[in-house]
Length: 154
Image (cartoon, rainbow, N blue to C red; front, side, top):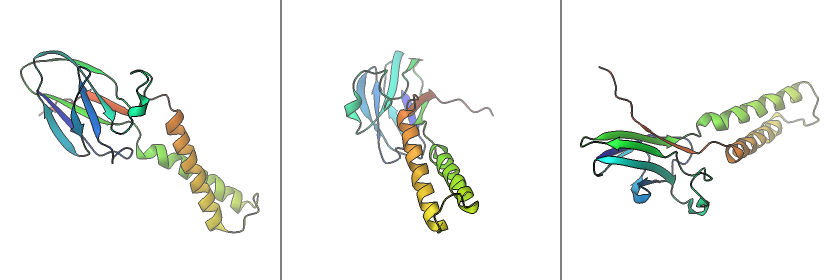
C-alpha cells in the first residue's frame, strides 16, 4: 500500500496531480489531500504529473510537468510518500521585490522621468511578474517533486 500526501503549494495549487505507478495511471490527488493506492509487494516506480499538461508528452525526461521517478521496494506495510511543487512563493516574490526596489531607487534619484510613484510601482510589479514567469519557464528544474516521507523521531 502506498499512501500519498500533497501539501499546499503556491504554484499549480488549482491543478490536480496525476499519479502513475509502474507507468500506469492510478488516480489524481488534490491540494491538502492524502490518498492510498494498493500495490503488490515488490519493486515499483512512482511519479506525478500536473493534470492538464498532456501536451508535454514528448518523452519522460524532457518534460518539466512531471516529477522525478521514485523507484522503491514496497513491502506489505504502508509506505508514506509526499508530492509537491518546486516553485514556491519566493520564485515570484524575489523578482517582484527586486524590480520594485530598482524602480523606486530610480524614481527617488530622478534618473527616470516618471512623476508618479504609483506608475513606477505598477511598472515594477509588472516587470517583476514577467521576470518570475520567465524564470519559471526557462528553469531547467522540474516543476514537481516526489519523495519518501521521512519518519518522525519520537
